[in-house]
Image (cartoon, rainbow, N blue to C red; front, top):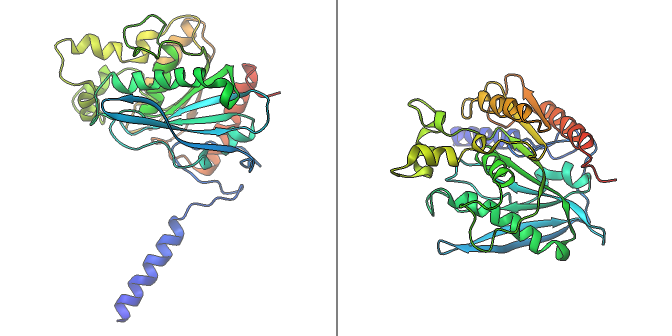
Length: 306
């Protein structure tokens, strides 16, 4: 009995220790979180949950909208979650995005087809369809189509880059999803930019990447086609990159190479490097630093709400 009580006490203490802090001085730390001091979510934010934006592969694909109140059109961030293309789902709430909401952005969080439902290019198509949905429904949710930001973490960062970089008139977009807003900026948090190196022996994402790409006779060409670096050119949206330089999942060099290519083509880009940072899950202080760098990036590119 004493042993049982000890174990219960240890479990309770462990549970308390693992409970994320939610006050402004100790913001929750999760892969999609960015922080700003004194940035609380507006209690008047209007939530629209479980909206079907596409039916594909026998699945209803859904998104959530967190809308700024009032009649004024608001800039909107469209967020794609990570999970190596095969797992996870859109966040259950907007708690991790309080900073963006406090800056006057509306938010759309998106689910897409995972590898087990359909391999590439399905999730890329879905990301593009989500943008098309934003344009079709801009008036209903007061989205400012001049300020649409694609945001993603990890494989979601890859999708945000693909959503914002693939040119019109491509052979990837699904029918009915070709009329998309011009993306004003991209937030790429430790996303994949070049798939080919990740398919090499020993790469952390080799299995996930191989499964997502599938078995194809034109695998090399298709791998390039599914890599954001393939689409770098002048005129792309300003891009804000965040990456830890000790990331064991997506090598930091992926973001460095993207930055170099964007600079070479005259695309506004800023990279925030987290020294010793792993694959997301940055500390509270690091999250605050990311938030400040993000705010500066928005200011420099005239994307802050007046």
